[in-house]
Image (cartoon, rainbow, N blue to C red; front, side):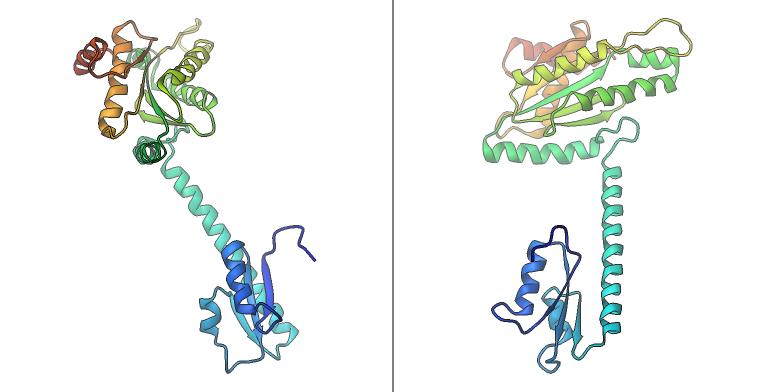
Length: 280
């Protein structure tokens, strides 16, 4: 009779027709999240250590009283629950360690971990990979005028906009301060502009009303877009997106700049803008 839901514990005898209890234990532990209790009447031939080594959670030697079976079952279920709770807690702690508390995007530390994996995958499968680097325009002035609490509200809303603008396979990160990065796997630079424009449009509809003013304050973002070149150094890849973003700043802010060819006139112009880094 097939189970209609997950099975927490299987109790099996060692001696069975066809597959032995130890073989069954191997199969269960390899394919399912289920604990196994083994029963045997051959205490001289099978040891507790052997059963545990094969993946069993416990072993019972016959004849076993019902009370003992029930006690062992309760212990395995209790340990199983504790293990699951610990795994959930560790997963939450891991998520917290890679998440920016304010924006709920991934943090910059995780960005560098993720970009290495995406570049490796890009190289292995010959897939495209695009990178967006975003910087909120005049954010220092916004903070100085309205206070850091209001600035934090802008950052939080920016995190939500970025999340809502991405596909499941994409990743958004708070790169630092008012800067954000977005990794777009299997996406060419031209296609990444769709995401960049979507973010700018969503931000343009936002109405920021700091407590010290009665009029809405416009917030804009400058964006740099680029695409990974095979065997390119990751630092160079990130710097090119950074250059493109600063070129957007120099060209009047609230702009999107794509930078691909390092030998172009546009690249040299962006390089000069990036070297000075005067606009905020």
